[in-house]
Image 1: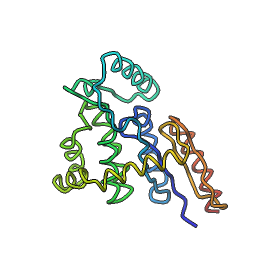
Image 2: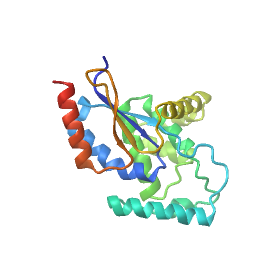
Image 3: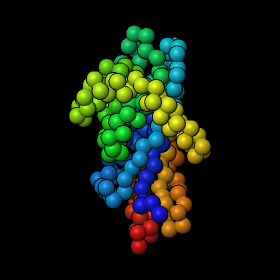
Length: 212
């Protein structure tokens, strides 16, 4: 039977996933490598091909305000004002998939870096050059990253993630799943945002039963 682990269905451009990022870091601190986290890209808005209207930007900024109120995390809506900006979540998701090939821990770290870059620093993470620069911060070669990121293999791998998310019945992000238990089953830890304390407490209780 597989060792206990978490499956984290998320999207780099999902504001509530950004809000959940400190919770993910608290989980990593609490359990370390004893409870690995695998990230699966959910596919929030892949393939969007029309620039956002001002009305849509205002609506989105309202959602961001709710996340800020719940989490205290900083937001800079300047990312939405880049010329010709398309709220296409596929480029950033594909970047996470490429980084994931080098290990789950690096993928989790890169996901968090993308979220900060977009929401707090107003960087355009639909841009390959921006994505490569952020990957370089984690030690990736920019040229090799861009080559892999632009490949048909990476595109297909990312869309397989979306299919996995759909087959798992995930309808919103973040969604955190834990398993397997002693019967080999997986269960939902949280659907949607939840603060660190109850999430970590739930996992501590679950893993104590699972490894006992």
